[in-house]
Structure formats: C-alpha cells, structure tokens
Amino acid sequence: MDGIDKNSEERKTTTGKPAVEKPATEKPAAGKPVSGKPAISVKNVVKEFRLYSDKASTFKEKVIFFWRNKYKGLAVLKGVSFDVAKGEAVGIIGKNGSGKSTTLKLLSRIMYPNSGTIEVNGRVSGLIELGAGFHPDMTGRENIYINASIFGLTKKEIDKRLQQIIDFSELGDFINSPVRTYSSGMYMRLGFSVAVNVEPDVLLVDEILAVGDTAFQAKCINRLKEIKSRGTTIVIVAHALGMIEQFCDRCIWIKDGLIERDGEPRDVIRAYTDCYMG
Figure 1: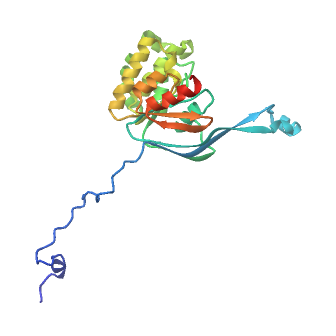
Figure 2: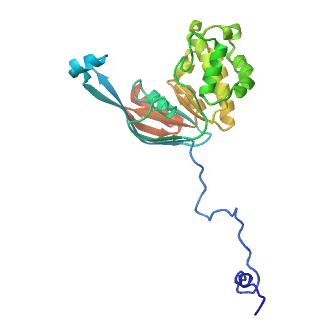
Figure 3: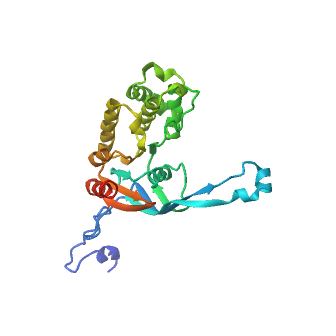
C-alpha cells in the first residue's frame, strides 16, 4: 500500500506488535564474563646481561685488544609471565640474584627485556633504588620537583602537593639542605613521600623500606594500605616475608629466573621457607 513505511513493517513481530529494539548498553550474554584490562601484563620476558672478563674502555683498546670484547651472557629472567589486576597488591620474593629487582626495573622501564612483552597501564610511580632521580647538589625541596616531574606531574600539580610531601617525609628543616648530606633513611623518606603522593595508578616498591626506622616503616605500611584501598595497583619486592603475607593479596616466588610458584601469600611463603629454611 502507498504511504506505508516498509521499515516499520519489518520491525513488527509475527504477532503484529512492534519489536522492542535492544538498547546499546545491553549486557553481554551469559557465559561471557566481562574482565577488565590488567594493570600489568608480562609475557614470556627474557632478560640477559653481558659479563665481560676484561672489557676495553676506549675505542683504541677495543681495536688493538679486540679479545677483551668477548663476554658471557647471563640470563637473569628466562621466560617470566604473569598478570596483575587493577587494585591488586602483589609481593615478589626469592633469593638474592633470582631476578626480583630486575623484574621491578623492567616494569618501571629503567631497563628493557631482550625478548617478550611488558604492558603497564596508567601512571607508574616507583621506589626502586635509594637516590634514584635525585641530584645530590640540589636541596630536598628542589629534588621533589625533579622527582615528581619524572613521574609525569606538572609544576602546578607539584605546587599543590608540595607541603603534603614535605610533611609526610618529616624531614623538617633538612628539606632545604642538599640531599648529598642525607642519610640512607632520609633518602628513603623523601623518595617514598614523593612516590606515594603523586597519586599513581601503579606503585612499584623495592626493598627500600628496610632502611627506615621502625616508626616510619609503620607509617609507610599504613599509607600503602590507604592507597591500595583507593584502587592503586602495588608490586613489592621484599625479603620481609611477614609484611608480604600481611599486606599482599598474592605472592610470586622467582627462583633461578623462573616463576617457581604463584598464589596465596601464605601458601607460597610456606613453600619458600620449606625450600630454603626447612
């Protein structure tokens, strides 16, 4: 018939009633759970270092004493894979030289893998090594601006957080002294204060907390719990097994460059202690 909208006729069901169009926000069918993108994804990562027995230091030496350029490859990570969900706290344990700190440096992009892929989503803040990102001749206050800018903050954002960082560090008048005059504990105070106050999506912490005094360590743990409750993803490398078990949702044990075990902190730590201390 003339004047009839064919499209409207096609939208009718067999009963003659107009079909209800599905909204664009319809939920997926059952059996297809929605999973968010992980905060950290590590796939088949291999990291090797070169060990030179007698490395030439100048171009002339490299040409004349060419045999000095020979090296032996040392594989620290041999194909590591794991994911970390958003808001998850993961502890990495293992003996010295097992690849724990190397893993953290790869996540922070201080170094890059020989093969494999690493994807970290969001703003990354880290406390990897004492004094990393600090200029020894500048004051603590000046180094706050340098360190925070490395984490991606603008000057206006740093200005807004400056007093909060200083207060948390408890450095007092030392904040205006060159950091070369700082003790290791003062370095840790300043570095941790910056790292946790830049509002990171992913926080990476190495064994740095071990150099602080007991009261400040407790304060740091409380701050870690606070930012974890806000949904920040945290990865901690530590030999303090008690802290890992108490704080972390999950524990990864790296042994000889491979993941030996990955699971509940209590189970992984028990297996680790049985292996080396039992």
